[in-house]
Image 1 (spheres, rainbow, N blue to C red):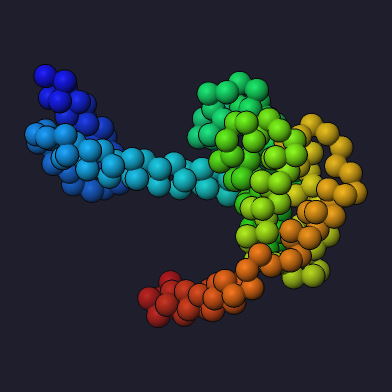
Image 2: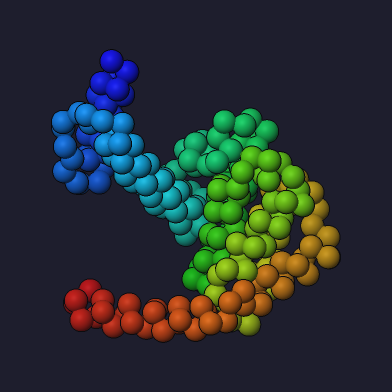
Length: 214
């Protein structure tokens, strides 16, 4: 009986997901634990992917638009974060999101990419990391270090933007040693080989889009 109940619930979830993904799903109930497990695993992957996409969409809007044009609500962003069910951590995430909404519009794509990585690091960090100033600072710097190194002309602007995110996340003034850590993360490639591959991929992507007439 329990297998049938779980299978029926899974079909409802699959049907709802199909409306979000535009995919076709079976409306037949799973008839074994193995089938139930396999189908649930697919659902979990789809849900995680949709959450990542929605989170990224919110972050992109917050970063790209001036405050009076941002339509996303802070609560909607917090609801997608890993900290949503931990009030103390959720409050910190809300502070970071609100600070970014209120921050000056970022026009340079390289700066925007680094800031997006920093904000996303806060959204995806475990609650115990979010509530630990040292840990969340380290998580932000690690995320920033994974982004391609911006050109020298925007180093200062990028560092300042990341420092503001750290200040919002920790509730503390950011001292020079932490600013130096941010500078190192922003200006030092975490993986030069991957940076080179990414640069080539960007060119390939642009050429393919051109061939497709976009």
